[in-house]
Amino acid sequence: MTLGSRAIVLGACASLSCAGQGKLEDLGPKEPPLAGRFTDTDDTNEEESVPREFPFDENPSRYVWQSRTRSPQVSRANAPNLLRVCGEADGAMESVAGAVARRVERALPDLDGPELVFALRTQGAPYVWPRAWAIDGNKLSEERVLERFRAWLDKDDAVGTRRCGIRRFGSTEGRQIVGAVVADVLADVEPIPTRARAGQWIPIRARLLLEATNAKVVVLGPRGVPVFVPTSLEGSNVKATFSADADGLWRVQLLATVSEGPRPVAEALVRVGTASPTSYDEEQAPGEEHSTNTTSPDQMARAMQRMLDTARREEGVSALVRDARLDEIARAHAAAMMKAGRVAHDVGHGDPKARVQRAGVEFIAAGENVAHARTLGRAHRVLWASPSHRSNSLHPRFDTIGIGVVRAGDGSFWVCEVFADL
Image 1 (cartoon, one colour):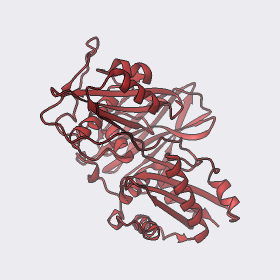
Image 2 (cartoon, helix red, strand yellow):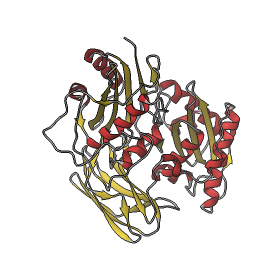
Image 3 (cartoon, one colour):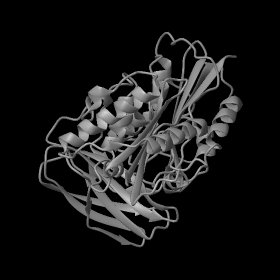
């Protein structure tokens, strides 16, 4: 029997508000694409009706948007044994798990972290920091699949309620592919429209799944800095309302202050007055044209700086000054994240404040953006698209930056940006 499995665990974190994530791995040889069409295998749960089709079965690279963001969503699980070791089933995650598996089938690039998040948003899932996994091989035994899946899950401790989406496909030749998407869910949201009219008031209603002392809703419009909107927290229930007063893509993020500090717990996308993108690459950030595929650390850092400077210039903000000491701090942390295989502000060497202090740099304020993506352009895009990351990128107090980029053996990029008011 030949089998291969891989994990897709990429993403971005900002400002001390992110949890850690697992690492990319390839545990076996990649098989050639299968001839013919795969069909669902295993037993399907017929007890619940699912008012949705799987949008990625025909084209795993084309996105068809759901009309609402909401959670949880009804599942049509076809891998019950895997779900028993994973957690609660979710229909939106199940749809994206189908895209993960279909990409393996067709020998397409894996969904990297930014696109994995985007795929979930198109399917109306508000979950943050998702992970993806896939295995393929001939005549896979259930025991072997469970062993690999459980080993991958055990690399990260669950925080909140773990939810999963799993799709399993098989061919008449005996080959099977299993795709899975997993996230630790910290909040559930009531329906939020993914399309709206300019000026429409959009209510945000959510229920926290962990104890929190504070909650805030922040929205990021097509241009400008993120805006916090008045938010109430009563028990575990969160309420807020905002007006989407301009055409373009609006990003909604719910932040909660938990025992580890403030962190994003749910997100949604709302499109106003424009067509919804059918591919991830339709949504590029300003400055992305300066992306490069170089392997030179200095050139990679300069490319990230040019992208950020261009984006800041479009917002009427002057360029940041590079600092060699902050560059070294950023490079060391990018390398440490790559070695640890996870995107986080602390991978065993202290948080940003501690690392800057240990380097002997005197500062008034500091912040940090970190990301991991298939290309430098995608790393810049995911940072610019996130409300909490853009807050750092446009923060009026920050006048200095250090940038570190490390390229992994699989060609992906680990990025760290250290901002400071020196």
